[in-house]
Amino acid sequence: MVPRRTAAFALRHPAVTTAPQYFVSTDPLGNQFSNGGERITLLAADGQIIKSFTCDDTGFWPAAPDGTGPSLVLIAPQTNPGHSDPLSWRASFSTNGNPSVTDGTAFTGSAGTDTNNNGLDDLVDFALGTGGAPTAVSDGAGGFTVTLEHDTASQASLTLEISSDLAPATWQPANATVLSRAPVSGTVERLSLSVPAPPGVTRLFVRGKVGN
Image 1 (cartoon, rainbow, N blue to C red):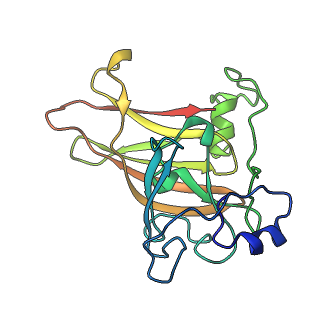
Image 2 (image 1 turned 180 degrees about the vertical axis):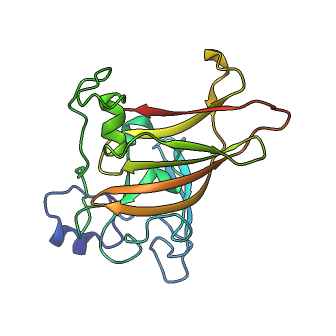
Image 3 (image 1 turned 90 degrees about the vertical axis):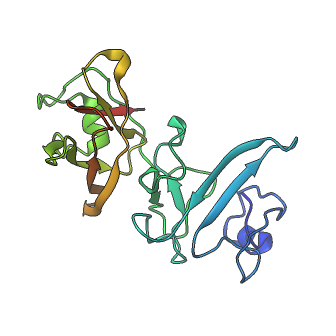
């Protein structure tokens, strides 16, 4: 951890190892992450970039971590999700954050099995929070509006892919835009996403992909 105030952080989380306060922020209030969002870059000892991404506190970014106690947590860090995508993040379930540990839930079932006979793989159920299969409705312009539920406590990634002909080699990540993000119950949220058709594509297929 690289806290803003190492001594204060150590009082609250004595078991968590902290690094010296090396980070530098452009926030006018001092050495802290900006409340208006900024670019974060992690560098290795030799100066190589480990990760560089932007974060924010508006739009579809989780609001609870914006100074109210919870921390901002990657939903499925083991899948190396897009760090600049607000849908890759959630608020920690612990009020004071969860430094050095995860408060998410790991998949313990068997991928490829449909235990509850609902037509969905157990891993898919785990990612969706058993909210049922996603729906895709034509947007009238060759693309789709996709609605799905996602259990943010699950350590599973959920992404959309598109293809023009269903051939295995043609599937690619969808250039989806978030239309809405709203809580359903517990740790489950409902997402509505716009998936436009790429230029020149006259026929489009869309699918969800779950990673664990």
